[in-house]
Length: 230
Length: 230
Image (cartoon, rainbow over all chains, first blue to last red; front, side, top):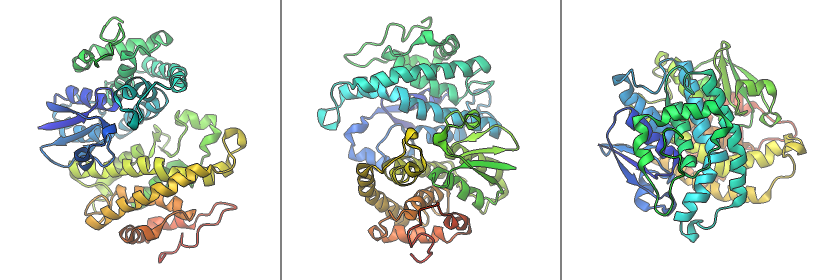
């Protein structure tokens, strides 16, 4: 059995859950609140971050990028048609660059701000940094997201999928991040029609369904969130 | 021909250069100042960061982790004895976790502060953020490095190398980061004897020689920097 420690609003956790669905892997999802710094969880991942995957009580596989490689190495060869990693080293490098871009840069400059200010800070106790959203951080994120939407649009317009000819981990990474902001009504879909059309294609995949059905207590998703014709 | 765009004080660039030496790959190193945001470089890597590798004018391979995978995928099978990646998926996950730890967390909490405050800010024009070091950032780094030294010491005491039985990318990542702080005289070697003994082993490798010979104009390395019996 594969266990995934995650938080429903951690974009990196969403990325891993989407990828596991795409690879047809059954898993049990355990909710973790990283800011609690739970002792038993720190023994599994000393960094204290989600996501973490543990298979059959083996070595913990920590972090979205590491889980991606593990998943593809242990399952990719069995499902060549559904694999989310290209079979050529240069094309893999491009997919990995974009996964880093979305889970790293896009998260730091945009989505991480939205999630921390509007979700985590509501769930955290004051002692762990909880409280009112920082309006300067939200403002920065709202400015930055427009550049990122245009980059996604540029990729979507020049390739079939973001990472190349085929659906790949790059699409999962971008869509996982965007889905968090979309729940919060923070995606300016009017900014780029190519980005919007690409997201509609990803959103309609079966792997997305379980994500779109989740809600957080006390916070309803934006009206367009689960709508496939947003 | 393989070209690497790098900065001599970018720990991630040092990691890539060390790894290329270990894999016996000839490459040409091009100096890049990321804060200049040079147009031709942004066309190669839109993130504007180093390191970037380009082989035979092919697709740019951007970022230390992505280059690591590319290097191992394209060369690892030819040098099973010298490979820096284990041949089992779980052990690879552990090596990748540590590479992320050192190039990510260790860099953010410690080494990145030293490099930015003491090197980059001296090289940058004021308009790009140059100027006097921020003493609060340096203080934070000096506190944090002690925890990290103990973690390195803990790994070194419980395993032959940081990532397991064999020398791996994890050792290169930790040593690349440490070497930057060591140049600046910022490593408290007395903190952990296991960490120190491990670093002495890595430092004596041929791959380290070219790094240890480099100096930056106007800033001499700490006396112990190139000394194998520090």
